[in-house]
Length: 450
Ligand code: FAD
Ligand code: ZN
Image (cartoon, rainbow, N blue to C red; front, side, top):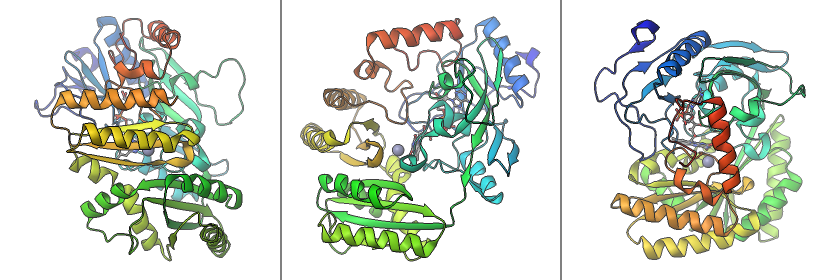
């Protein structure tokens, strides 16, 4: 490895330097840590490792929730941390050319400095990287209005396992000249290539944000609320549902008072992003008034300041505290069509509480996208984790849902992929992997079942 140069390769400083993502999946000390600083160096590293068949764990910000970036025995780490330059922001077209190791928050701030807006947002914004967001096709809180990471990517540069550089840094949305190859790499969890640069479409910067928290007596009402709000609030940018246990635990861990005097089964956090505060406020007030009259909601609080808005968001953002406090826990990110959501949740709540009495089962999610999250823990031993996953994924499959709406498959869900993909689809995934990475040096033994 010395051939690659000392500024690229370094030994782990200690055995403790074994980066782990946020899942409970294991991680082993890597053979070496490779830290290229440019696309050329990534290409050099990959050509070298491919020649010698050195398997690599591709690491972004390590905020993944499925163990995909954790290093396994015998692997070296390829870290994107030093590819952290924002190369250019086109202030006329609203596009950003960035290296893959730029963090989500870095881009959000840079966009804002140039009077633009990058709407993708998730709790891990301070650490996760845009390359990692692309590799997992991250979703987050504003998909209902702006779509997933895939929708924000205009161009991509990818280095293949043998070092071949595919540079397609388009700055326009329309390009039908042959296959749109970038789509193959978005959401492929580092199986098919290493993302090194991205062109991102920014959005006009909203200047008026309205946030409200609503109290409801059941999930069915939340789908009615969603329909009502979509009809009258074109600026609706978030519709986050939280079950009461989630809000109570999140509030307790953060030392927050509960949002209402009474307790309710369901809470919905809504946000609009617009350009005229008084218009936005009156639109939201009218919509909530209508929802109260129709008995779709039982109570609501509309934030009167940015500080209050942040407080309302804190209940939802308590996810990091919950993931830490409930360790070891399983974090599920499933999706199912809205008409089936209520039955699925009731079914899961009953089965999980019967079977795993001692642990919390906290439900929340981006309901506008049919995306349900569940944090379940702390589980007493690894056997329980397996039973918990099997039970949950079987139920999801029975309702025709997906075992991953957001976080991907990694190692954690690999053996459950058959619940959401047919044999023929899994075979095609394996063939694509073989074609692009014949020696299987990129994140081997993840995503595709053996
Ligand atoms: P890593 O964790 O480093 O890697 C994730 C996967 O991508 C691995 O398989 C890795 O090998 C691969 N990878 C990373 N970089 C590259 C690259 N440049 N090229 C090729 N492959 C690469 N996800 C959502 O979708 N929505 C949410 O709302 C959400 N909220 C979260 C909240 C918290 C508190 C946390 C901890 C995580 C959350 N996530 C969410 C999980 C989400 O997948 C990650 O936060 C993020 O998208 C991963 O980025 P990362 O840079 O940390 O990637
Ligand atoms: Zn999510």
